[in-house]
Image 1 (cartoon, rainbow over the protein chains, first blue to last red):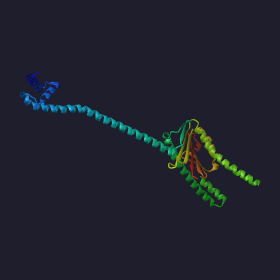
Image 2 (image 1 turned 30 degrees about the vertical axis):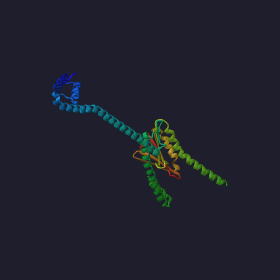
Image 3 (image 1 turned 90 degrees about the vertical axis):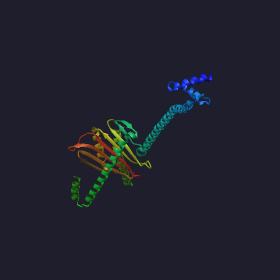
Image 4 (image 1 turned 90 degrees about the horizontal axis):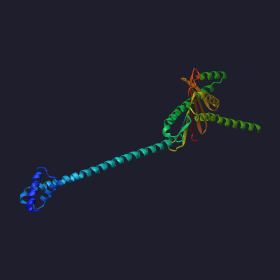
Length: 176
Length: 134
């Protein structure tokens, strides 16, 4: 294509550009044309402008190209973080359960229940019943001890009474 | 010589009878723990540091129609230890404490009463064996 023809074509494209009617390919042609050192004098005044447009569109194009890539990287990071958090929670839960089982075994291993003929050995399930039984046992032990103390005191009183008739009368009195 | 043999035999017999008397309550509890319509809990308490057993508590809850058997066995065992019967707020309690060098055994029977007579609602038997670590 000779220079004059090319220049005329470029003039038309420049007009089209400023009308906002150029395609991306036509714009690329314009940027490449004005990026060269051999710009015709008739179009020299536009050279600076199109070189500026060219650098801006390169930046925009890169941003547009980066955004999906950045978005994908961010998404990957988020998914990895969530997965790590879920794994950590799962690990803590398993560790806690295993520790709890060991703790119950160290306190109550060997305990069990039989309900209507069916035996239950799961310490986690029967723990409330175990603790209730042990708590009641403490109260019974205290009652047994108190009773023993009272009876011993009564016996001491009776031992001090020499007269057997009087001792029997006192014994009945204490028994009421 | 014959006197010594008789005394030794009597002592051995009383020792064996004493052991069997405790076993009667334990045996009855064990029998009713595996039948239907009862709830039995055997709680073992351990020292968490050494895992040695310090106490065993057995609690049996049975229906009232079995009460007479337990009352009878408690009364028959009453001379094997320190025995006491009390009634407080319509609850009758039989308490038997047997002390041995190695362990203290406490047996308790609890049931409802009205006007001095058992109501034959559910009864509860508790056996506590506390080990003395000797």
